[in-house]
Image 1 (cartoon, rainbow, N blue to C red):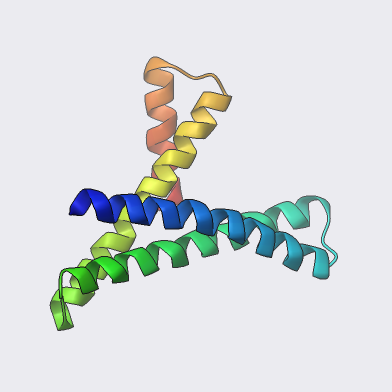
Image 2: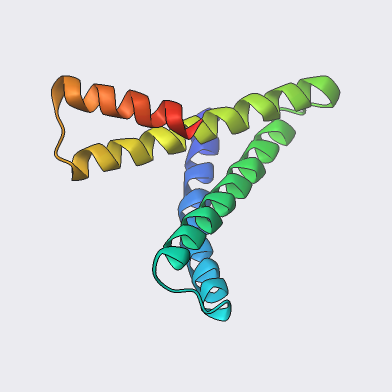
Length: 118
């Protein structure tokens, strides 16, 4: 059952990310942003969209588990923190690959990058 929930969450995340990119692009165009301002806006906008997608997936999992009250609040807090950490680690891994880092240099870079993202 957990594998199914993870697959659904991943699908929502990918679909949501594509939709978020389109929405963020439209917002940036409407604001007439360009260059560094547009890049910064897009990064924040897409990050916010991913966070809301993760929150929705976590809420769905909490409902599936029939959690309520403090148990639900605790689960959501941990689930969203785990999603953020996973997203940050994935982004850091991608950056390390772009920089062609390997071994200890890659490990150190990813560890620092993920810590900075928190």
